[in-house]
Length: 105
Image (cartoon, rainbow, N blue to C red):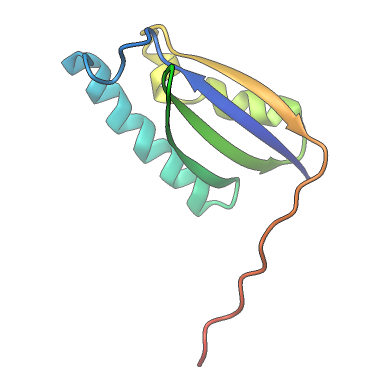
């Protein structure tokens, strides 16, 4: 398995403050889609990033290869909606993950 960072660039720098109802509906489907990827073990973390130069989305995924990461990006409802969102995919060759202890019985 390999790790990839997926950066979701919005259609404009003022998004989400001026999001249209169509964009917000697509974002709701986007959230459902990524929750399913997390539940299936493909997405480790997903969420918005509020940077000084504007908001964007990120997903950290663990998948067999870059083609699978690209397929996850292509399957996102905001991409299918063709509203101007775009993913940038970057490989993460090494990753340190925190250890999560099993809950007490």
